[in-house]
Image 1: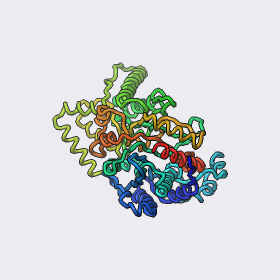
Image 2 (image 1 turned 30 degrees about the horizontal axis):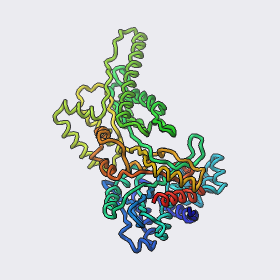
Image 3 (image 1 turned 90 degrees about the vertical axis):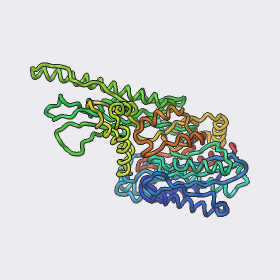
Image 4 (image 1 turned 90 degrees about the horizontal axis):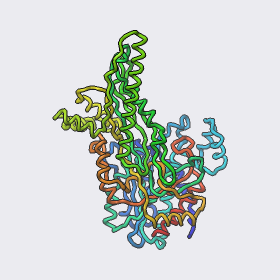
Length: 539
């Protein structure tokens, strides 16, 4: 197999892409980078002769003016491989006083040494010159640069392309995935217009050493994610009358103890397991100090899956909430009994009972109690979204549940379980031919690279295929208060595309940290050659 010598081109292009600030959610940045990539392709003779094969795709239902890029090169036949990568990054506040240097790959290492007490490993990596530092260098502008250089190569060597290549540079991957979702219609439009057959998508998102294994990998398929949220309503009281209150923070803390880092909730495949769920937020609803106890609180948790069904995750979370409720009721009664003994007064059990609902169950229950509930909660959601278009998805769902609580006549303590964000579907690659070709391409290029199932971090690959039944998806959406208001999950478009996905990732260390860095040899030499080999072998 012919070896591509693109290292210097990819490295220089990575530095240029890093220099263009494209932090997710900030006006203009992602579009500025999208425009640069469009100009890059426009400078190629191929796209000068075929300008209709290059376009910007504006994100839909977005409060920001953001764009993704789609371009494609036509060779021989209809088989088409998608090359995908995201153009946005996380913020740079972690760089502190040298934030401006986060985008300057050549100057950043010396500034890191000057301003921070660095670990020995980071210092060694700087001195080795084997790594390129900078925000987005690893996650994942180097991967985008790889795809851009491969597109350029085949645009200049069309005789070697026995099919077609389609490039997607999507915005908002670090946020709500509006970029890739907004591209789905365009992918279907191009497929129908050009009679393309999408046979795989190659992503180049980053991965790092894990579990003590310092070895780069190609991943077949991608992990899935749900974000279970728990809205906990208690009973407020003056702190001097604490046994007449039910503290929602106490119950939420017990839920967190049982779900966060609980390895029994890991999902398992032949390569190992997901990381366990972990708390991403825990808060109550008080915005100022008072000696009244809290009425309600919110917690939500990152929950990764390989093979588990949505129904299983719901059942797991509901059981955790119910067991936690029982534990706290028993704890409070035991403490109250001791308190009564200390104060020589008669003990009687506290009035609390275990009440846990999914949002779907909660909605149906309140609808049965009040004939106006459905219309009024719908009107409230539309009004809330109109007045607060930038409201966080998770907090929007929480606000809806707090509003629905006003229809709850019992006012007993209750837990409402809902999903706080869009579903990232796990995608298992079942294409034996593709798996064999990936394995062959790895052996042709670098035997030191492993092949594993399931890319271990969530990615936009989850929006190109979905193995879940429509019933499962409906179960998930019925427990999303934000659906059809803040977003629409594009299940039918995803099922229509249903593209096998693989990740030939950039490799380095410390993604999302100020010491983020990409390994130059693997990313700028090995990755493009594995991708080139897959393209040639599969087409």
